[in-house]
Amino acid sequence: MNTFSEENYLKAIFHLERHLGDSVSTNAIAKKMETKASSVTDMIKKLADKNLVIYKKYQGVNLTDQGRFSAASVIRKHRLWEVFLVNELNFSWDEVHDVAEQLEHIKSPKLINELDAFLEFPTHDPHGDPIPDKEGNIKKTDKIVLSKVSLNEDCICVGVNDSSADFLKYLDKHQIALGSHLKVIAKESFDESMTILINKTKLNISKAVSNNLYVKTN
Amino acid sequence: MNTFSEENYLKAIFHLERHLGDSVSTNAIAKKMETKASSVTDMIKKLADKNLVIYKKYQGVNLTDQGRFSAASVIRKHRLWEVFLVNELNFSWDEVHDVAEQLEHIKSPKLINELDAFLEFPTHDPHGDPIPDKEGNIKKTDKIVLSKVSLNEDCICVGVNDSSADFLKYLDKHQIALGSHLKVIAKESFDESMTILINKTKLNISKAVSNNLYVKTN
DNA sequence: ATAAATTTTTAGTCTAGTCTAAAAATTTAT
DNA sequence: ATAAATTTTTAGACTAGACTAAAAATTTAT
Ligand SMILES: [Mn+2]
Ligand SMILES: [Mn+2]
Ligand SMILES: [Mn+2]
Ligand SMILES: [Mn+2]
Image 1 (tube, protein in one colour):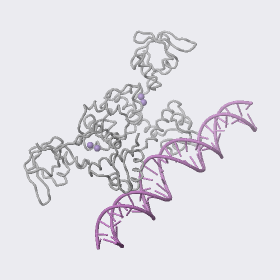
Image 2 (cartoon, chains in turn blue, cyan, purple, orange):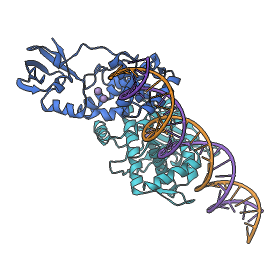
Image 3 (cartoon, each protein chain N blue to C red):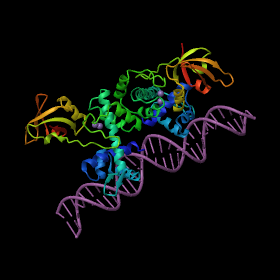
C-alpha cells in the first residue's frame, strides 16, 4: 500500500513521463508538485526502494511497470470520481478536481469497481480525459489542439488541456462544452487568435484558448 | 481544518462521552483507539489548544461545542457514506465500515450535502444508527436491547450495538435484518439465552447476541 | 577547455504523530 | 493513614514528509 504522498508523486511522474516521453527530472517533478527539489530527491529514493521507479543519481526517474500501474490506478479513481460528482451530484466540471484529489486516495478495490459499474463504465471524465481500465491501460485518443485546425474545418470539442476552474468557467460563459460543434472561420496571423463559429454565433478566441481546447475533426 | 488523526480522536471522545455521560479518561481513549495513553495525552493537548476539548491534567477531557460539532460532522459523513455504499453500490452492511472510515475524512461541504440529497436525506445508517443533521444534532431513538424485552412481546429489530463483520454475518445467516419482526418465546435463566421467533422459525440466541441487538416494542 | 550557470544531492532542521520507559499523580486496599 | 496498584504525564526517541542552505555534479557558454 502506498501513502497519499507516494501516490501523488507517482501520478506526477506518470503525467510528466507521458508528456516528455523520456525520463523525468527532479526539478520537473518539483515544479509540478509545487515542492522543493530536495524533497523530491528524498521521495524518489523511497519510491525506488519500493520498486516503483528506476532512479540513477542525477539521471532522473522512470516508472517501473508496477509504478505505472499504481499511478494509472490512482488516475482511474480520480477520473471515475469526477464522473460521479458531475453526473450524480450536480457538481460542475470546474468544481470537481479538488474533491477528486482527495477521493483518489481511498483504498478499496470493491468501491472503485462498483462505482465504475454504477456509472455504467464511463470511458472519459468530465474534462474529456480517458479513464484507465482496471489493468491500467489508457486508450489513446486522436484529439488535436484547436489551434492546429485549418480554416473552415468543422470539429467537435472533446477535451481540455488546461482544466483550471478559470479556463473551464470561460468555456461555460461562451457556451463551449464537450460535444460542442465548432468551425474555424478566421485566423489572425499576428497574434494567432481565431474566430470560431459556436452555436451559430461568432466568437473570437486567443491563442491561449485555442491551444488548450482539444477537438476532433470529422 | 482538522487532520485525519484529530478527527479520529474527536469521534472516539464523542462516542465515549455519550456512553459514559461523564468526562473521558486518557486510558479509555487509548483503549478505544488502540493506541498508547502517552500518545493520547499528546493529542488531547493539541485538541485543547484548538479549543476542541477541555482538558485538565489527570482529569480527563470533554468536548467543547466546537469539538462536539466537528465530531458529529465526521460521524454524519461516515454514516451517509455507509448508506451510499449499501444502497447504491451493492455493499453489504458488514463491508462498509472500513471504507467509511476513509471516506469520512473527505473535506467538501458540497459533496456531503449533495450526497445527502442524492440519498434522499436518510435518517439512519445501514446499522440503524442515526445520522446527525447539518447542525450536528442527533435524534435520540427509544430503542432497547433485545435482552431486556419481556416474554411473548413482539418487537422489530432497529439496530445493532456491535457492528463487527462477525456479528453482522451471524445475523445475516439467521435472517435477522433491520425491520425484522421478532418475538421472545422463551428465556433460560441459567445462561440468559433466549428463544425467539423470527420469520416463523424458532432461533436460540445467546446473551451476547440479545445484548447487541436493538429493538423497538410495539 | 575552462568558466559560469544550472541542476541535483546532501546535511541538518522542523512538525505531526507515534512509541517506550520512567516519573508523578491519583485511586484503591489494608 | 500508609502502602500498593493503577492511571496519567513527561522525557526522549523514531519515522514520514517537508524545508533551507550548502556541496557536488552536470550542462551551457565562452
Ligand atoms: Mn482532475
Ligand atoms: Mn479530469
Ligand atoms: Mn461504521
Ligand atoms: Mn454504521
